[in-house]
Image 1 (tube, rainbow, N blue to C red):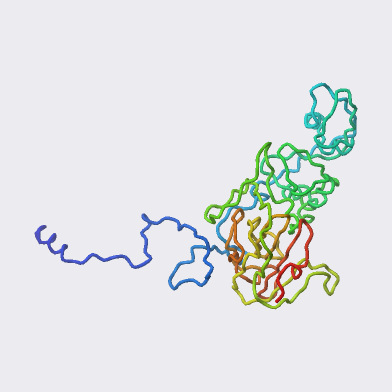
Image 2: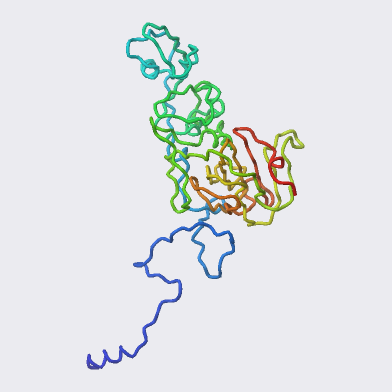
Length: 359
């Protein structure tokens, strides 16, 4: 057939469009993540780009690992003996700590020094013995505790750390107890809510300030960035779901203390933020609670949401009261779809029923 005829024939054949939703490999781009809608019902035929199934059965937005996983710690603490030191002209407490290998805060405690920790030439200081870990950039209290097989709460107590438990690069913190093997470290350390609240943020460099939360869920906060929490709690707490309370705050039947309440709800019920706040944690590292979201609200208030099947927010994201942050599930040690809900003031759990409106 002549080439002219083939061209004419080709012009009569209608152009076939690819089926709806098709993208050629050359045109494909990763989908952009958008904030979850308040109506969580998925539209017919709409691909679920917002969630990614994890190995533990909880769905979550793709997010960087927490800082204690992204920046592990080597147990390289320096052990020093008790000694004394004569302050030289130009010395600062930090310089003395660097020279002796002890921690500046430990030296201050041992000698009854108060802030701003001024020392005078000729002053004799007692240098306390111990194992001291030098804090590096990005390291967290959790990672340090895990490296030495010591509960983070013990390190807090040994170093007399106060809220907000901020670590600074260059600090030397005292590690209580003696050296342990790798197997003992793995068996000893168990992550809990208090660890995340007090030891989950990476160390700050000198004069560095924490990063403010963002309302853009498609821009996850780097695990190496410390998160700034709100200054003030806005308004009162609201119920995160509607359902029957099946476990109450306080001692259980076997004597263990329960730090929150459990609310029975159908699977995949929207879990709502109980108050305005920022996401301090969204993940699955606390095994017994499964899918977990922790919000900080300011004035030392925190709310905790566990056993979720889907996590719809990321660390560093600001949320509004009533916003859907997760979907209910039976992850962790739950034996039915339910929500584990806590409210804490500082490190202390309080009865949520005393903070929520009466029903």
